[in-house]
Image 1 (cartoon, rainbow, N blue to C red):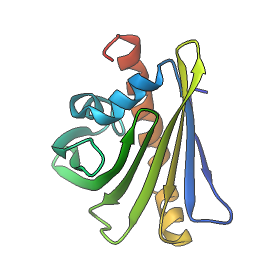
Image 2 (image 1 turned 135 degrees about the vertical axis):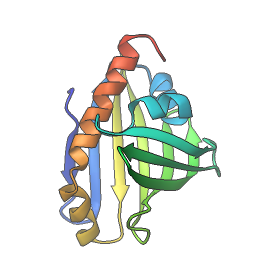
Image 3 (image 1 turned 45 degrees about the vertical axis):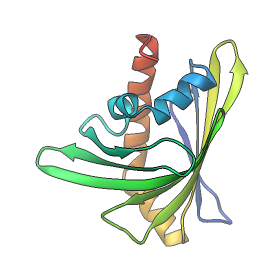
Length: 157
């Protein structure tokens, strides 16, 4: 699956994203924890990512800005757990600072150099979840993952 499957849980304010990559779990972990790599693929094609803080370890914190022309959008969070096949972190869009999500990313080894990414974002309300879904997040997710595919194909990881 090259398009991410994005699903809203009907019973909980959770968004689940699933996508396969031609990569090992180690490569996907590095793509999500190395700030230079993360900045190259994160977000929609119309933005660039500027890392301001990045301490990808259990207990570390992060902050970056997505830049589009003169507009800047800040995002921040904490890495609660960084392990070989799983990342647990918080995620806050600074434009809506009360909306903190708890995100869990799991890297499922499918064999033959392929990995399935399972991402889950738990938000504080169904309204908050639905606002995320209506924000155009699928564009950023799919365009960002396409850029990650390109980095993997070039051997950048």
